[in-house]
Amino acid sequence: MIFTTREDVDAPIEQVFEMITEFDSYERAAMRRGADVQRLDMCTVAGAGMKWRANFLMRGKEREVEATIIRFEHPTEIAVETISSGLDGAGNLQLLALSKTRTRLAVEFEVKATTLSARLLLQSLKLAKSTLNKRFKLRAAQFAKALEDRANSA
Figure (cartoon, rainbow, N blue to C red):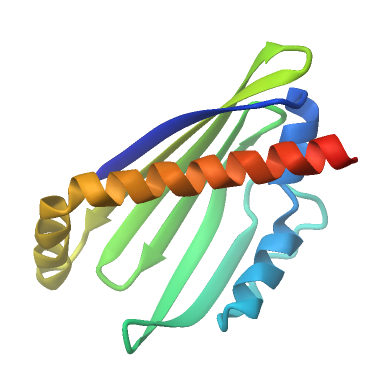
């Protein structure tokens, strides 16, 4: 199942990329929501090869996800691969400079099942695809708005 959306941000591409790559802030945000996040790599600067493991409670069950940055092209693209029990994901964020002060953020995330139970889960999710797509687009729009607000306050 694939989710895609595009949002425009009133900020220069360099500034948007810098804000998106503040990975420490994502770690802290996940921990505030109750997740146990561990950094698995030894990278000293942001780039391909960065890796995290997160454990969290979702729908009454303990979940574990590993996320790895597989592509990091400054300032235009970041690709992330996620692995969890039964579901694998691939996320891609692309930035395009529309002007000196405006950037388009394109987000794509694909989820694939690797087990039979995960296939059944994905089949049930496909029935709610339009609702999930609306949520995905809303979250991306909120993220873009937050980036824009941060850029304008700096």
